[in-house]
Image (cartoon, rainbow, N blue to C red; front, side, top):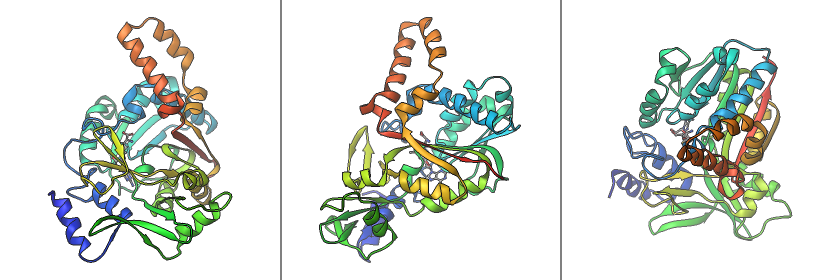
Length: 354
Ligand SMILES: C[S@@+](CC[C@H](N)C(=O)[O-])C[C@H]1O[C@@H](n2cnc3c(N)ncnc32)[C@H](O)[C@@H]1O
């Protein structure tokens, strides 16, 4: 039994543990949380999951194109700061900095923000040349930042925030929890989450409908909005519109050794847990925090719109066979619907006034 399991057993003596609280403990307990341990196994190197940036440089290259457009639209500010909360190993920042060209590269400053100690250690290595040149910096989660012109970027940050699954049983709303005998669904009092899901369900609710509710979403959006005086908010994440999530009866997912299941209460602290991101709600909160034109599209469409594919094709022709194959896989993984193409969405929103 792990120490985290012992802590959970002790906590259960005072009653069922809501799934969101279990997720918070499993991922962020200061000593035993999956994202708070000092060293691996974690994420891809722990062979639990991979994200879009594990597959090659295409996402970073597409972001360099998109942020160059944003920099032009803002009147070429110098510096153009990109803050990445939940930046993990810093690979996306590295790929972005490597792909930036010309005057934009000169103006680009990348801020890595993630209190995950194992990831920060890996980021120091991945970003080493850029840290030495003063083009990148690691900032602590609680470090206050002067508002900047630029962008707030995240990849799979929102799906790592603790979330509480709710389910409609035909008559009332139930919330998911861990009890003495295992996982249970318990009747819950009406609240903001149940009001939101009830209002958003298209064509009414059916038994089994439901979705996870992320309590921290508004405060994180407000915090990130406060960092950005003018520029682009861009987030890549797993999720969908509220009606589609409700229809799917979305629940938490556990990633362990590249296996995905719903058994979030198993091997707590040793597996990654994620919750689908409610993009309808995210757009609402972005607009309430001063952003305009919040809109999202599939990763597949976004990549096809912004990736420098003509340049890729030229480079691709002259590559060794093994590298050519890797590049092709990178493109297919990000664009094919059943791979990441349709399962991930990209949200963009603009802040144009100080
Ligand atoms: C699923 S991982 C994604 C890491 C990286 N973006 C990637 O794609 O490989 C989520 C990361 O978000 C971090 N995180 C969670 N809440 C955060 C917050 N409020 N601010 C910054 N980082 C956060 C966790 O420590 C974890 O490293």
